[in-house]
Amino acid sequence: MKKFAAIGMSTIAAVLLGASVASASGGGGSSSGTWPTSMPLPTSPGRIVSQSSTTAVVRSTDPVATVQSKLDSTYAAKGCTRKLAVNRPRDYLCRNASTGKTDEVYFTFAALDPTATDPSRSQTNAFYLKG
Image (cartoon, rainbow, N blue to C red; front, side, top):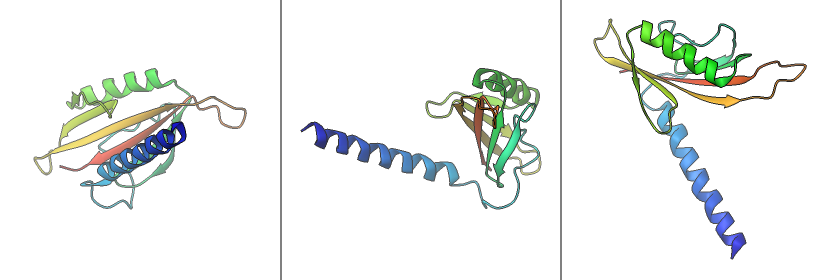
């Protein structure tokens, strides 16, 4: 019975993860290109590992809490509103001056153990949804 329950839970987890990935990419437009310059990424310090027009991955030597604080300051200075959401630790709504609509950018985070070859302490995953 325990084996059945474990299989059932892993199936539920796979379905939920699949749903969250699908919603992250939906509505953002094309996935090719580069991250929009109007939506700052936490690259000070940090390096972009991968990017498209709707997603980006940044590694930083700053811990997650420091990256989150920097994002809050950066997006507040842009006039964006922080939206509280359960599955999106940092979620901002920003008015797009060229379209008059509201764009959404949100970030998820992973804490990393630094190594000799990669001193990164955190990874930030960014998602852009154009309004």
